[in-house]
Image 1 (cartoon, rainbow, N blue to C red):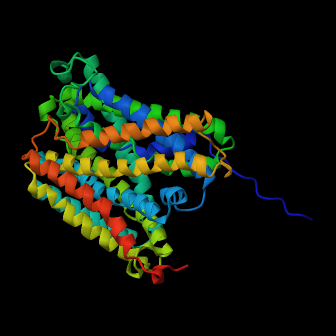
Image 2 (cartoon, helix red, strand yellow):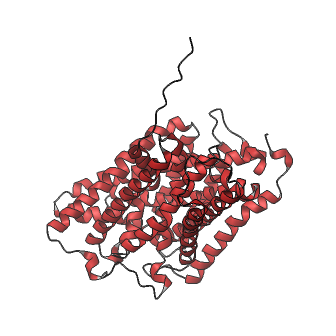
Length: 468
């Protein structure tokens, strides 16, 4: 008797949408947007309509056309060759490495509320120590394999991201209902920023970065029963949830705290302190500080090994030397994680060079955004190229509108990314960054260094590096 194939289980629109929300959303972005006041609404609409939607739709098509492992490496390689594919996965990896010192500075700001003196959040030394201890701790946990970090990550998302996010929104609504003064009304009178000077919209690059990561969720598009109809629905549902929490959470912080008082790494906890003080619930601050830090640490624990797996795949393909192809008994890419850790340690020292923690936080955020956006330009270009070079490859999902639709959607995404890159080089008017020359020089040098690195490595690669 012929065995029946096991019944396939499909993802629902809601489940995929929530998976995308988990990948993209992080509370560390709330203070960045809150510092803008009402113009945050313009930044949110720009980032969602001209960045989040194009990334999601284009990635879905590429994921269904080329479902093999590799993600952006595979897609860009198919379009432009191995060297550009390696450059794409390199940029995706290195921006993530630079991201660690920013998200862990958010954790440091939250952890400072476990102590008697929350002003520790503004201490450069405190931030550097917390970043390095937590990062290396997460790295050693990941040496034990993904199972070792799975439970910590799940608990971190539920307790440290979703709960504090909903709580700050709820407290913000209560604050308004009680007729308390709304701080942003004193400085913000329009949802449009002042376009007369790029310094006034420099935060745009940081806001766009908050919406990055949808290409990760696109790999699940084939787990839908009707990808063509259900995937766009999941994208727009995820976008609605992300925009709602980002907007309401940011407005809650901006309502309680004057713009000049908002710390980029501790703004969430500052808002909690102001809100809870009204209800004489200040004793909850250490608890919320622990939960917010726990959420950030759980996210980092999950991401420490994740992106470097893509780098390991390219290493085995011969793009990196054998030293970086080694794995331990658990199959973990230990040598890549060691190198990654040393880079994170060096980058973290930037906190000691800048005038204050917030300026260092945003400088690294801007560099992260610029590198990630360059990767997205490669992604969009690959999607357009493959529509014309490989029209015969079946795609379960296609960007609507035929080839013209792809050119329009991906083209808008490229223009938005390019605009955000240019804006990212301008020192923000909302922060004291010390020397503007140092700020721009650091971003320019970092961008050139990290873009050149994969091509230099590829130039000197040897046939003997490949395991295939």
